Length: 616
Image 1 (cartoon, rainbow, N blue to C red):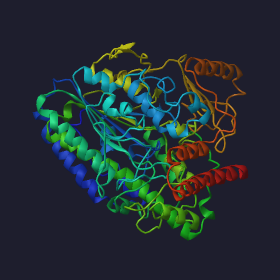
Image 2 (image 1 turned 60 degrees about the horizontal axis):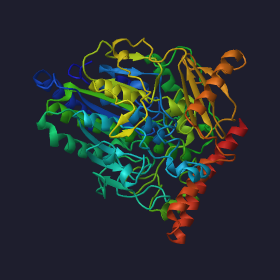
Image 3 (image 1 turned 60 degrees about the vertical axis):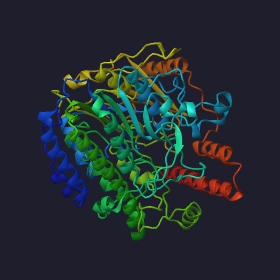
Image 4 (image 1 turned 90 degrees about the vertical axis):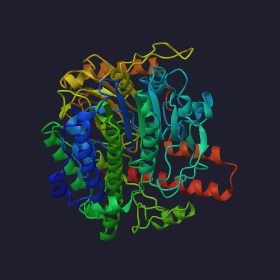
């Protein structure tokens, strides 16, 4: 599985499947990567050293958003890593970002780590009981802390979102050098918040508040700083752990025009065509079982009902999304080029995944007059011309989100597979699993366990840094590199999850699942997600004993993990509004009105989804 062996080539299917024009910048990056990898590999003098580890985390990337997972989007660098590594077709995370990040970085349940939800969406009733909810508590140790204590350099550049108080920042949680964004997201082109619930975008460098430079694209900036950190200590010979959580493809969806241009004509046939094409290709790649059914999501509009102008605008929104993914891929290639040039790539293992499935929170009518007016008040434009460039605001709607998660159902915030099943690639070193796919179930906490196993560093157990901590429950995925058919979790191992009533319990090949409105109806269902990953066949009536067993397991999970019941009438949009008002009440009346109006648009989007669901 060594990255010194393969030659990256543009795949013919990219041009055939989606009217995609070749992306010149990506071709240059990947050809450089290929040449430098092959040149550096045989002369690498560090192969006997402890391995370096690079953990790359995308934000809100859908299951089939990589070409290696069935997409029409050009991702040649990640495709190369997939061909040289192991792809996971059954890896699951939480359905939104902070809980996933807590599990991946600690190997402990997000509930016990103090992050049942993102802080902005914690129910007010829960926050009143525990004001720190949504931030990483000190009952857990991060892998950065453990690795740093074992002699690793530890670096982070990107989104943190696990607490913004000085003692909660990554510089105080094991990372020796950091450039970190504290909030859920920020503008990709300038030092600017993307939502009026925040006073500003809060960036920190080594624990201190800083400002990121304007005019530099986020993915480029984060890789620039990561290269700077790694390069500064390479001469001492110590291994490093590099955590690179990109802003891509979180709202606002923005990308350099050079990347977006490649997709100007790709999405003119609409979301149904893309969802179908991705389903077929994911099946042909072996990521989805042959003959697996797909169900339509109630929040997906009919493409034929849109006017020609609306179709052109929606296609442009998705073109920027695709460009953002390709830009991230190219920047990953630039990082790998650097590692190769420094002679350390062949002794580096890489892990790539996403924090949850694609987000469908974009307004179905992003360029409507009212939305345009309020976006202008926050300093953004939504015109089709220049969409995705500096000063523009963009997000995909639920309809194209259904294509991003194809062939799965539901998306971010919901417990359907589309919200929780994401790509995972482990690449680097030598393994017989090179180019293979595993359908073994894996969970977010397993990332931390795998990182420590790669480094051959033991978790400290129940004490670390002079304080008691929770033991790690995640399991190393490294055995799958030797045997992709193996199971990490046995048939009787339950894994439970809850996000404000959107709940799941995994056990063997089966999943107990419940989603609340507008996506679901609050009912429990039972699925065989190995054979039916799109969750089309509810087995609750056909297998009542199994259904009862998993319900008991879920109750045991809520008890052992201290899951708080979701308050009656909870809505995440209202919780977000309340959080924003609390943090910005001292600002001008205009700021408060803009906040309310912006979040009203989010609520209107949810109302649209409910009406669409009712029509179904």
